[in-house]
Image (cartoon, rainbow, N blue to C red; front, side, top):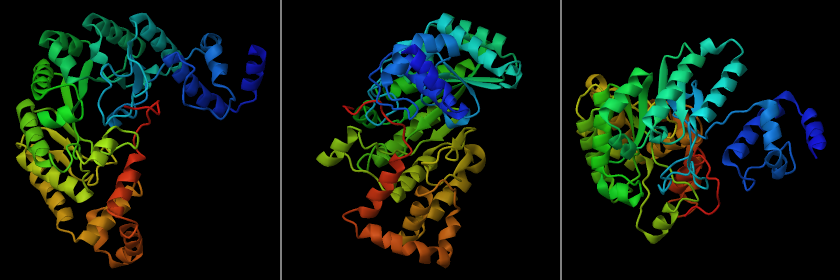
Length: 411
């Protein structure tokens, strides 16, 4: 069987071999043959799983997680934990169908050895690193410090090291522990705040309270580590929209994070929130309603030196709403008002243009009658496709940009 596997591998192109290694890393990391992924280069899941030890020994692979922040697109991805320790949020598909586990320091060091080997003397080009997965700071502080030390040894030119962390984890870390991590190179922590409303946090099963968010955020800010808080317009639905906006702004005004990153809500087709929609307990919001919610939030934010960012996430409709609040708050409000002042047809046209492509069109494009003439028939067709036909189509194509769960039974 191994001979057949080795023969099959030898027939692959270099690109197919690279793709297959990525696939194999997933199987090895999850230690399961019950994966929903298929790879076009092999006929059996069991092939890699059964011989993963041989494959790992021969090709010296290292693990990588499924997601990272957009700002870490060029970073070296170092997996220190697997998946999410909470994994109950009803809006997040990223780790569904997986189990959480902590990796040992020795495992992480072996990965770093292989990464340095792959760069073959060019490890100096690595400037930024992201520690995966969803809550890397859940590891013991002493273990993280050891990883940071070894990371700097293997990649001596690193300028920035960042990580995801849950607010509840940061609440448990002392300021002194966080200062130690900063001293060893941890520069920035990304946190999913999502909402400042206790009602919204409970509804989406976030597993934290506004008090947890404030305590964890204050710990990070006091330590001197940069804090990037993620908020999710639309996650409260139409019913809780106003409370979601104002309470989120209140929390951010207290924490005063370095970054406020906007992540417009999109609902995955398998999310338990679909049942909430069917039951009438959650009413999804159209683009113009979400933009109005963002405007309310920005209006309630203090003019502090926090970078409010819509520009790094393609699900955000108005990506030009971007800048430091103490410098560009009024400009951002004007950009939001420019969209809200459009006619219904113009708003629909802009939504369709943005959602149907990755291009970041200026709002002024819908003032071009030649553009409107071409797009008007498509709007009419969607409007006539059924109740809320246009909005349902927009929500559907937005869901294409979400990560996929590793299960068909997301509850």
